Image (cartoon, rainbow over all chains, first blue to last red; front, top):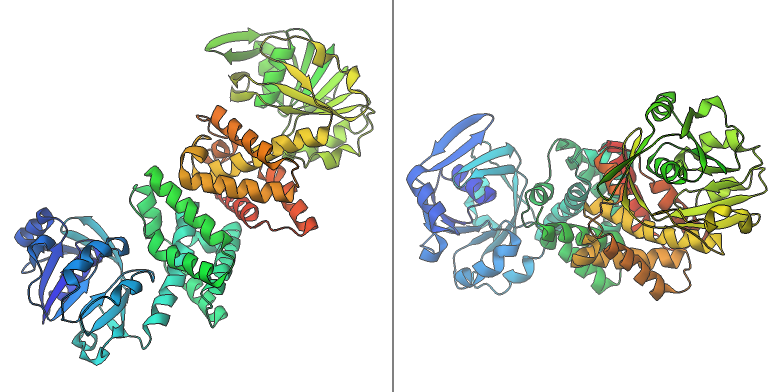
Length: 294
Length: 294
């Protein structure tokens, strides 16, 4: 299969390197510089302390336009989607969107492709440089259909080592599950400056963890609150030593995904007239720290 | 006048050095070590880039007991008061308490002295070592009576260079004004990691500043909210480049004054049934960071 991937960040590089084992991959990057390095040297994938060099991946700057592909994966951050959309609006091939949060869903309706999937990536990935990515946590990619038949996506029936796929029936609940996890863990770890496990082991942090889960699950009208709470807690413990992406973004003076993650929740709270005191305070704290630039 | 001062922290050292110019000062410290250094070498006062060595201050460990004095100033942190109280419970001379917050007021009723004053210190002071203190910000000390006549306190009619005193009619409103300032500036700067001015210049931080002032002034039923808000803001701007004591405490892994400052406000909110979402979240954040130990 010819697979196009838009985005040369950690997730784009991770998908390009793993999918290139069985597919013909073209990676579209924001800068022509990054594309030419990948085109020349391939992508270096670090996993379990081993280095693998994956060559044979075609890479182009996005400005060159998108060639014919059978599946186009959009792996840019949610806040970069608006600049990508004009390029993919008229494309008719199946599209797969891998953004965090829920904010990207509102963009998808304006696309012409009859087949649109959304995915949730549960892998850990760290970009070292323009053509090096470390697979820091082995997870799974969940895919659900936003529009069209999920059965058409052969990816989910393949076996790629260390890179499993699974399907979800309902894109809304799939994204919501991930959103609740991200919305509780990311802002708190970013503001408190702790690894994920610190939210559980520090009794004051754990009170905030419970408070924030309570507020967010109320705003999103989560059906099975106990089960959802235990899920968020189990993710925290399974990734106890990880520093969340939002914490790392703030520490490095980078833009965070706070709008994608808490923005949707705040607009839901507003439209439903629900209390959002802690969520909106954390939103302002992260935005304020982000604008300080680390 | 014979003045006893309990507490060898920044405020105790600052008061001892300035008051020793006109008075016979005895400084009671927690450790005998600190007392013997001060007894031997005096106190070094740094102000405006100049060093002054003040000798002739008597210093003793608190365990040696308190000698006859005409005024006893209690300059320990609020959280150390419970261990000091048994030693001063039966003392009949005038007492002056210099703690932040409002929590110490509840302790004063059990004391036997017929004359009890409370003070609010608006000086900036930084302790460099056991007998060195820097006067980092010239301010004023406000004194009000908790019990007995204020007219008996000759201190407020004296002129000591760079160390003015003034009186306030009502101890409650005097402490409340300072409490609102501390309760807004300290926790926010501590959690956001900014100098005081950052709360005004960063638009997201300023929203939090407004939110927190609104919540706290509601809980404390502040009478003139606009005037009080402008006061807190003016303190923030006048001390724009200062790092608050709570921020420095957290950065250095020290205990903060969060209980003295937000504890009283949270118990007021509880007894009045008022919303305290942001105050209690900031309380938990500071307590959590404090228990991480920096």
